[in-house]
Length: 397
Ligand SMILES: Cc1ncc(COP(=O)(O)O)c(C=O)c1O
Image (cartoon, rainbow, N blue to C red):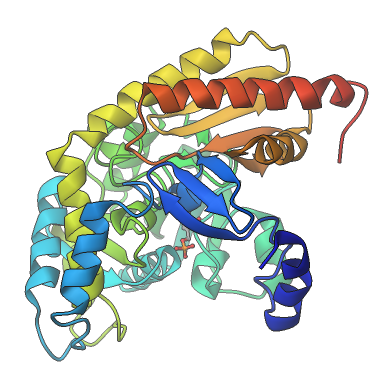
C-alpha cells in the first residue's frame, strides 16, 4: 500500500471518514511512527491525545494480550475484576464517587447530558468554540457552529456563552441544569480559560444548584501536568467526562460522578453493551498504572514547559503565543498558516495538527524526553521558516 493510491481506495471504501489520508501509518514505537514507504515520523499528536504511553508500549501490549487471552467481554449482566479495579482507580485519581463506563468521548458526554436531564431543569449552558463530540446530543452542546448547524434541529435547550465570568453570571439562574465546559478548549486550538473562570463557574453553579460538567476527554489522564485539569484550580466538579488518553489507544470512555450527581440516573436509565468490558478496562488500568508508576504526570509538566520555552525562544515573528498546560500545547500564529505549517512539518517527518487556521496543536505521548523535544523544536522551526516567509505575503491556503 503506497500513500498515493490509497487515497482513491479509501474514498471508494469509506464514507464520512475518508478525507485525504496523507500517509498510511503501519507501525509505531514510542513517539515514532513509520508509514507504508518506511518513512519515520516524530509523533507529536499521539492520535489526538490518545496514545499516552506512545506506540506499542510493552505495558499496553501485555495488558491487551493477557486480557484478550483470558476474557475479553462479558456484558453488563456480569461483573468483572478489571472493571471494578478501574472504577476504584478513577475514583482515587479524580476524588469522585462513582463511575459509568462507555466507549468514547462523545458517549461520556451523552451520559452527562442524560444526567443533566434528570435534574428536571430545562437549560444547559455551554461555551462558544467548545467541542464535545459528534453524536447528536454532544453535538447539540458543541459551540463550533460548522459541526453543529448542518444537523439542527438537535436537542433543545443548549445556550452558548462567551467565555467570560460576566456572561456566566448573566446567564445563570435556577432553571440551569448544567454548565458544560472543557478546562482547555482543545479542538478550538488549545484555548485556555481566563484566570479564575473555573472557580467562578464552580461558585455560580453551586449557588444556583446546577451541575458543573467538565469535559476532560482531551485534558485528562495526566496530559496537562495534573491527573485532571480541574485539579490545577482546586475545585470539585459534579461530573467529569473522560476518554482518549485513559485507554492509551484502546477505545474507552467514562463519566465520573461526584456526590449526589451519581444518584440522578437510576439503574436501567442508561447503558451500553461494550461499556467497561474487561478488555478495555484492563488496558486502561495498565495504562494509568504505568503513568502513575513512572511519574509521567510530572514529566508532562516538565516537557510541556520545555516545549513552550523552546518555541518562544525560536523568536520567530510568526509565533504570537503558546497556550495550554503540560503536553497539551497550542502555538498561535500571526496568520492563517497552521495548515501549511503542519503539512510542511509532515514532509519533514513531524506530526503536528492545525487545530484552527492560526493555531497549531501538540499532544505528544506523555513518555517523551528532552531528546524528543529538541528534535521537535528543530523540525518545527524548519517547518515554520519554510512556510511562513511565503505566507507573510498572504494566506497559503
Ligand atoms: C474535548 C473533547 N470532547 C469530546 C470529544 C469526542 O470524543 P470522541 O471522539 O472519543 O467521541 C473530543 C474528541 O476530540 C474532545 O476533544
